[in-house]
Structure formats: C-alpha cells, structure tokens
Image (cartoon, rainbow, N blue to C red; front, side, top):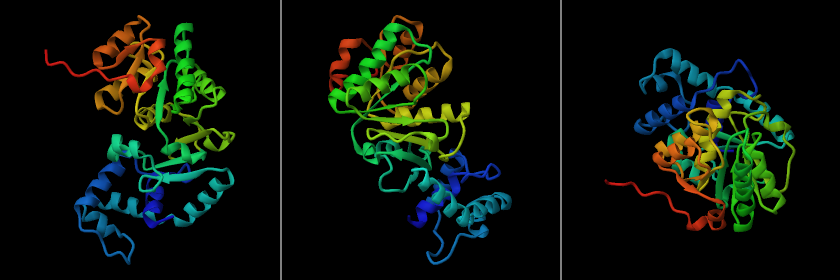
Length: 295
C-alpha cells in the first residue's frame, strides 16, 4: 500500500473506533482541492499543522487533520482485522478503484471503498437496478428480468441488497449464472463470500446499518454502472426516489424506469428518465437516454 493510499484511509475511515471522526466526503473534497492548488511539502517529511494552516484552515481543524494522519498503528491493526474477515480497502488513488465511479462523482466519490469478494467485477461492464422494498408483482417481474438479462448480456448487476427489488434482481442474476456487486449499508465483515458476488461498503467494514449510510450509498450504486434501471419508486419520498432524482439532476448515469403507470414514473420521465417495458430489457445496448428538448 502506497503512502497516498494510507493517507486516504486515515482521513476517510473511523478504523473501527467510534471516537474517531474521519473527514466527511465534503471535507475530503475541500482538502483535496486545496492540496491541488498549493505547493506540496517536501516528499521526505510528514505533513505538519503549519502546512494545513497554510491551506487556509483554522488551527483546530489543521490539528485534527494531522491527528488523523498520525493514527498509523491503528490503521495497521484495522487492516489486519479486515484481512482476517476477507475485507480489503480500495482508496480513490488505488489502481483498481472503479474508473466510472471516479469519473462520474469526481471529488465527491468515496475516499475509500471496502470490498469483500471478487474484485475483478469492478473492471467489467455494469448496470444498476434500484427499486422499492415493498414492490408490486409487475414491478417485481421487471426487477427479476433486469437481473436475468444482465447475466445473459454479460453485465455485472449493481444493487443495494435491500429487501424487495434489490434482492429479487440480485437473486435472479446469480441464478442465471451472472455476477453481482452489492453495495451494502451494514457490516461488510458479516457477509458470506460468493464466487460471483462482490460486496462493497463505504467508510469501514465493521460499521452497523444507519439510514445515513443507506442514503449515502445510493450515489455509488447510480454512478458505478453505465445505466440505471428503476423497478418501482415512491412519489417524492424514500431512498429510491431520492437516489434516482439526484442521479437525474447530476447526470451520473442514464435512467430507465419501468412504465407502470404510477405518478412517480411519470414525474421521473419529466426529470429525464426513459420509461420502458419488459421487452425493452432484451437489449441493454439499444437503450438511449432522452435528449434534452429545446422547445
């Protein structure tokens, strides 16, 4: 592991300590931008508080950043613990960090992703599937079909492992001989390894579920693949709506929503999603995003 990779880990992970407060994505982005614009310190010495203060930070924040970077013994312990659980870190500056994720999210991409499973899945063509936990039968059929077609067409399926649309699509993909990337919001270390499955999580491998983590991982799901399919969404509420509407605003990936007649689908179409049916899933490559209208 390089010094830069260690730095990203030290700054963006709590390293198993509830008392440790790593930088938020916003704070890490701000630091990265200021570091890019400044003259770097000599390569043969560690960053000091004075270096951080010179970037425009208050002394208290400068000391906090330096303090995070000094936790190298804790990092070694946490890495050993993760290795025993089959969990490995992939930092934003690691060679195997997903190119599309870095491209779509830029400095808002996670400083570190923890992974458990087949890392080769990160370099393969991918599509995402999102949807409601309480899902209607026609929408469930769409989720399953998406998983099956991902397997048949040679795409890795990305989803969030939640009840409902996520698990239906993931199971269908695996049963069809496909491969799945599951972005989880709970303890990665407790997941069972599977030859065709890769689990990912932000911040750490031992963190419990929180609603904040669940919402945060949505951007990873939407930005990691070349297309995002929506099996079902609530209207204006819920994690699916939040993630899809934000994707449409930010342009992370083209969105294709099941044409189920719901108000949510109609509204998502107005925001830029393309409404499709089951038969449209038979050729992912033929699906095109709506072009903006000038009238």
